[in-house]
Length: 566
Ligand SMILES: CC(=O)SCCNC(=O)CCNC(=O)[C@H](O)C(C)(C)COP(=O)(O)OP(=O)(O)OC[C@H]1O[C@@H](n2cnc3c(N)ncnc32)[C@H](O)[C@@H]1OP(=O)(O)O
Ligand SMILES: O=CC(=O)O
Ligand SMILES: [Mg+2]
Image 1: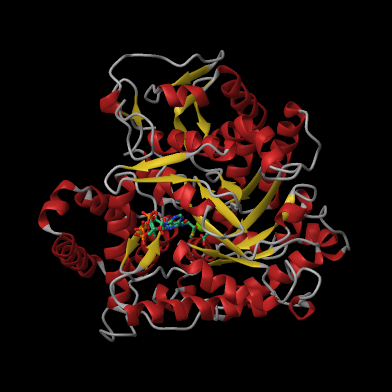
Image 2 (image 1 turned 180 degrees about the vertical axis):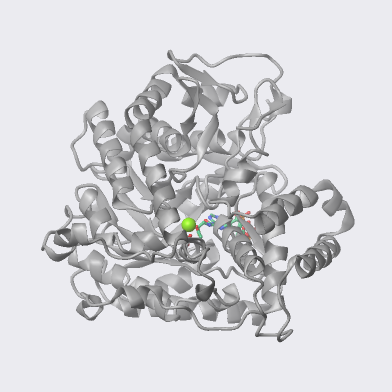
């Protein structure tokens, strides 16, 4: 059989028409593949369909609430702490003790659910590997189902990969990182699986299929009686955490495992969620293993939340670092909240990756990573993220500074952060806006979308790791600068951002991209389509909630071959 890079058969390799055996009310529109069929079993699909039927109205309600909150912010309101849940913030309570298997999370590697990468990540020496169906993955049918096949093999310990070009076989080491899985956010549908005529909720498909096939093996081999473990992205309110908690309880009941077996770390990566951290932990009290600073989406969310507040424009995104007061306050409050509630406070991702052909630049990049991680460990974070195996040594060295202890939950309380205020969390970042910022957003945004449309959700660009979060920051920032005709105060002093200027920037950056990638690759790639999508997103009268929601229409491929709009 002709195997693709993910190790499962490619469309060209599969000519025979076959169909999945589905339970009542479920319709699979994705390509048939024998390997996928081992994941999409009738029982597993029934499990997903049951989750969908039980929770779809709760999810719809939660998404409606997001819209209402957006309307309030657009009318001038600011996000803040909810007076109605003050008692949760003020009372003393703790989450269930963390499972011993994940006491030490000093360095976590992240990466898409691609076969070779999964093996490399599990072997990397990191304590945890977060396998990503989200920011780092383009959610095509092939990637998602291939990812499920790969994870099942990984949990079983049988995963292997043969790199034919290098004649290298990849297998798991004896010691591997503990596996966490990040499903998609609540907003993304799975258009290839219809349940009662409607697209399934993407994250219930990711969670449901993975849980169904792996919970038992995982608890025996990885979790020492606990698990599986998850990362939960992009929540805006504790009511969304409550849904996840109910999903977990239902899954535990169906599997016949103890309540509190499943554990999850929630990414605090939306501005509204920073005011809900206690409430989110409270909802997931028995299923929580902490919170994480999803700093890149957090910046995206800051711009999105304040889309109608021209007095809160951000400077160039490269200047919005963790030392800006609002970012530092967010990280400090997260640490205090987590440690008070007895769980891990995870740091975030530094975007630098190793630079192979330039030792001086490589050392400079490594130094930036070290500095960022040192800030985290000194602030009290219990662990951090690494985008690449080549950075794990440096990150580990810094996090070993915390001493002979697996985490700092008991030793770094950060009581000084208890009194951080709404003003601290919302303080407008300082810095200048430049044409170079507009250009970089445009150049990176278009290249990222082009990669995403062709199946890559994380890409190296200009020596940085870029994923969906960067593209989101880039396009909302461009949108906002255009919408308010921002006057540049970095370079090009006094120039106003308008459609004409943006049109010129797009044209010039497309020419630069073509030069950089070469005409042949440029023509073969999806750069023009990406440019169209990105430009439309930046100039539309109203701001789209998610770039990936719009772009998803371009990667939905119904079976038999027919592209589809949701
Ligand atoms: C905002 C957020 O959500 S951050 C979290 C989401 N983002 C991510 O997870 C990004 C993860 N990182 C990556 O995807 C990759 O590092 C990239 C795409 C940026 C760069 O990947 P590459 O171009 O393959 O880098 P490079 O050529 O240096 O890789 C060297 C080796 O390291 C491996 N590698 C690189 N990154 C990873 C990773 N994150 N996990 C496992 N293996 C990795 C490569 O597979 C390659 O292996 P090989 O030597 O056996 O062939
Ligand atoms: O998911 C992580 C982020 O920074 O965004
Ligand atoms: Mg994110």
